[in-house]
Amino acid sequence: MELVNNRSYFISDSDVVLRTTNNHKSAARNHLLFGDWLKYLGEQKGAWAKVRCRGDTGWLPKSAFSDQRILEVNFVDIGQGDGCHIVTPDDQIVLIDAGIGDNMFRFLSWRYNLRGRKVAGVDGVTADTARVKLPMEIDHVVISHPDKDHYYGFQDLFDSRKVKIKNIYHNGAVERPISASDKLPGLHYYSSDDLGGYVKQDRSTAYLWDMVSSNTQLQALIRRHSGTRKNYLQTLEKAVKNNPAVKFTALSSASGYLDGFGPDSEVRFKVLGPVTESISHDNTTRQCLYRLGNEGVTKNGHSVILQLQIGELKVMLGGDLNTQSEDYLLQHYCQTELSVSELEKTVHHLHALGNQINPEQKQQLAEAEASLQAIITRARGVFQADITKACHHGSHHFSESFLMALNSTVTVISSGDNESYAHPRPDALGSFGKYGRGIRPLLFSTELARSTNEFTHIFKYFEQLKAYEKRIAEATSESRKKQLEKQMQEKKDSNVAVYGMITLRTDGNKAILAQKLEAPGGKDNKWDIHELVFNQNNNQFEYQVAAKGH
Image 1: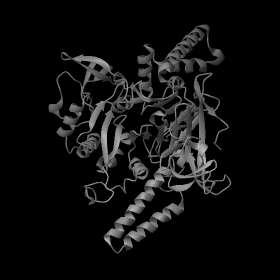
Image 2 (image 1 turned 90 degrees about the vertical axis):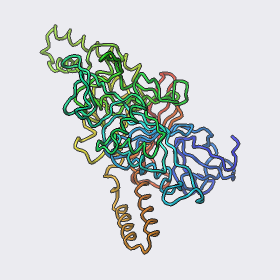
Image 3 (image 1 turned 135 degrees about the vertical axis):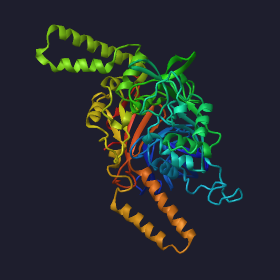
Image 4 (image 1 turned 90 degrees about the horizontal axis):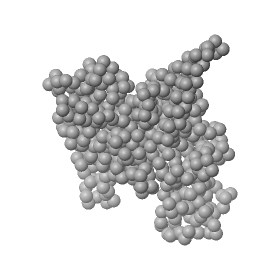
C-alpha cells in the first residue's frame, strides 16, 4: 500500500507500539489498538513511517497500516446502568442508553473535545469566531426502556447545544401523568403503573393499549405535558428543545432493522424485541405489549433488543431482560406454549430427588430435558451471539436456557458501585461462565475493570482535583477561573474514558476486546487485550487463549 502524506489510516494489528524512532527497541510513545485512527506525516525510513496518533507523534511499522476503518463498540463505565457508544466504519455514531449520571456525557466530551468545540450561539461564540464549527452530530440514540439508569444520563447530552441529535429510538412504553380525564372507558389502569391503560382479556392477561407508536404521537405527548416532573418525558422534552427536527421511532420485532442498517448493509442492527401482539379494542386494532408483571417487570422485559452484526460477528444488546420476558421471547420465537422457567423448575426438582426418583418421575425428567433442549436448539437460530452485553447488569433474574440459547463466547457486564442490588450477582457470574461457549468463556465487567469508585482511583488524582479547586478559588479574573474550571472538567472527562470502559474493535473476521490497565507496565503496555478469530471449520468465533491477555 502506497502511503499518502496527511492521509488518515487505521491500525491493522491487534495492538502495536508507537516508537520514538524507527526501531523496535526505541522508547515507547503509546500503546495503540486495532482500529485506532492515525495520520501519516509523509516521512518513511525503511519499513517504518512517521505518524500522529492518540495525541502523540512517533514511528510505526508500515505493516500495521490499513486504509479500512473498522467497527468500534465502547461499553462505557457509566456507573450504575448501561451505556454503549458505537462508531460504524462509515463514521455513524450510535448510542445505546446512557446510565443515570453524567459519565456518558463526560466520555463523549473527552472523545470529541466538546468542551473545546466552538459552536455559534454557545458561550459567546459567533459565526465569525475563528475555527467555529457546527454542532457535533449523533446519528442514532437508542433508549432501551424507560428505566432511569438507562435514559437519565442523556439529559446532559440533550441539554448541550454543541450536539445535534437526529434520531431517538424507544420501546413504545412511555411514562406519563395520568389524570381521571385521561382514562378511557373499557381500559384497565393499574394504580402503580404510569404507562397508561391496558386491555384486559382475563384475570391474568393484559396488553398495554396506550403504546406510543409514531413520532407524531410522542411529540404531541411531550408538548401536552411540557414542564412535567415525570423524568422520562422531561428527558425527551430536553431532546426536542435543542433538536426540534429530532425523529422518534418506536421499535419492535416488526421493525426488522434499525433505519439504515438493514440486511444488505455492512453493519446490521436487527431488532429482536420488544415483541408486540395485534390486539383489538373498541373496533380498533393496535400492536400492543403483553403485561409481563408489574410496571417494572413489564418495561424492563420489553427492552429494545438489538442484534448487531458485521461480517461473521454477532453482538447481542438486550437492555434489562428478565425471566418473564425471556420465557415470553422463547415462546414467541420457538412457537411453543411451554415455559422454559417452569421446565427448569421441574428439572431441578426431579434432579434433587437423586436415587429416590421413581420410574414415572424419570420419564417426566427425560421429557422435560428433551423439551428444553429442543427449545434451546431452535432459539440459537435467533439469539446466538459471539458477544453479549449482559442483561440487567448481572441480575439474578434470568433463565439458564436463555443463556444457553445465547451461547456467547464473551459476556460484558455494565454495573456500578452506588446500588443496592449487589450487581453483578454471584449466581449470574457463575452462569455466564458455565453456559458460555468455548474452553474459556470471557467475562468483562465495567465495575471490575475500574475496581474503585468513579473519580477515586488513586490519591494522586484526588489531589489533582483539590489543587484545581484551590486555584479556581484563588483566580484573579473570571476568564482565568473559567479556564481552570474547563481544565478540571476535562480531567474528569478523561478519567471516565480511561478506567472501566471495555472496548470492542472488529472488522467482522477478527475482534479484540480490551480494557485499560490500572497500573500500566509502561507506555508500551497500557491495555489488557483478548482476541477472537473466526474459525471457518466450525463457523464460529473462538477466543485465542495465547493472545495479549495477561
